[in-house]
Amino acid sequence: MTQTPSNVAYQVMWNRLISVVEEQAQALVRTAFSTSVREAGDLSAGVYDWHGNMLAQAVTGTPGHVNAMADAVAHFIRRIGRDAMAEGDVYITNDPWEGTGHLHDITMVTPSFRNGTLVGFFACTAHIVDIGGRGFGADANSVYEEGLYIPIIKFADAGKVDATLVRMIRGNVREPDQLIGDIYALTTCNEIGHRRLIEMMDEFDLDDLEGIAGFILENSRRATLDRIAALPQSEAEGSLTVDGFDTPITLRVKVSVRGDHILTDFAGTSGLDKKGINCPLVYTKAYACYALKVAIAPEIPNNAASLEPFRVTAPENTIVHALHPAPVALRHIVGHFVPDAVFNAFDQIVPGLVPAEGAGCLCNFQVSLRPRTDATAPEHARRSEVLTFNSGGSGARPDVDGLNATAFPSGVMTMPIEATEHAGPVIIWRKELRPDSGGAGQMRGGLGQYMEVGAMEGHEFDIQAMFDRVDHPAQGRRGGLAGAPTTIARGDGTPMRGKGKQFVPHGATVQMAFPGGAGYGPPKERDKSLAKRDLMLGYISPKTAHETYGLSEEEIAEVEERIRRGQPL
Image 1 (cartoon, rainbow, N blue to C red):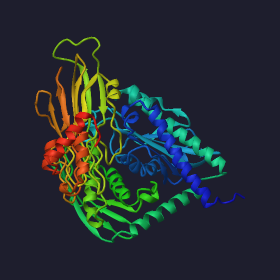
Image 2 (image 1 turned 135 degrees about the vertical axis):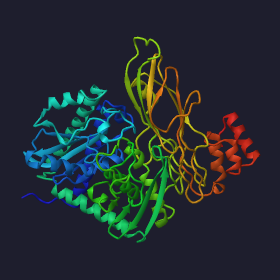
Image 3 (image 1 turned 90 degrees about the vertical axis):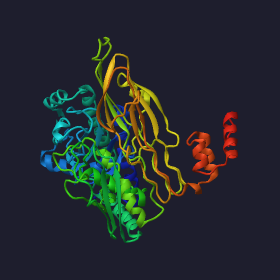
Image 4 (image 1 turned 30 degrees about the vertical axis):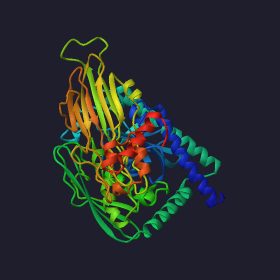
């Protein structure tokens, strides 16, 4: 008779599972074809028990993927059926409502068998550069226009890959080698997770995961509930208005702390948009849960039990609960603003804890390059799809400045220009921090950045703009000032729209200024030594140092002299 492991042994196993899924994620980073995965880390990886409960997630990844993927495995179990599962199976989908919110995310699930018995599952998700259709952007009027839809089906049946499915996928996308390469990378990283899990089970002589699953879920649930019980048992409302596509959208939130759970209700939020910025509830839920979890229980590992007490509701066919067939390609634009909206309410329940508003959504753009059509193109000119991930500044926190050009809440990394330029005939002429873009405050908002993009000689391109905060910059908290807004224009000054596909002729460039995070607390209360440091680093101008932070002309002159001499403060 096998002896029940001790709590110490279970804790060791829990830590091992976290390391297993981190290795799973790192394997995906190393083998993926898309720069969005290799360079930005737009992915997730997790391990699940026999019932489909997530037990552990990789640290590498983004909340929009992993928290949404937490619900996905149950859909795979329901669609495939346990009786139809076999060793060597691999399942696939990009269903926005049963995956992670839009067609550009591929989710792969692999059942894990030990000695012929199903013991659990591994799942992973990655954002892929192209899925056909109109391309990655907000221009579609329904999900049918946004690309190839793959329902939950078997990619591999008992170890044999479905060649017909592969041919169908290749025939419907612009970058077939890249996409199929990513699918195989996803498949392989799940297999690595499976091998490590079986090694752990053999080491600890486990026939199944029921015992360790119970330990993980029960301890996580109890720890999370303790944190919730310690909060004021009250409720508060907040809102956030952002640009939308053609008209502004407002997220309205009511956060209610109720002893054994926190309810976030989006009643009153704007309805569906005609264009592809709508957000399925699964993605809204992912970021609403994330916002509250990082506020009150950041050190408790993510799993099914630690996420369950954070409950989310929204009326159907609002922009945060889009139903099929709403266009959802850029669901991240709305989803990434959900935490700021939640924080605007939660700040009234627990003051002095959450940050000021930040840039919110990623400052992504995709460039579709082709040989020039206004004149004869050189032989080297070619078609290419290049997606680049970029960030504005995050909001200031109560005791710390906001982070410069850092993605919050998504956590994905900004791509280096070398990797972007390697992916296609695109040129990044400028990429640098944007002085004075961080909102002033006792704690300053993080800086946005400048970027200028063009194409190599002989090419023209379409740019898919995916920006916000053009007309609605990040708002400060508790006396802090707003961050700088987004701007976008051609190099000759011709204004461009913050969202949508736009043509850029041969020889032209697009100049962008990404938004700053907002400040926290009154600017006049900022420590002068911090203002001097910002001036020396070039984060603020002498004018801002004097007019906003109150540095005297003599103090500014002293800093400028130290800069000239190369002396530190």
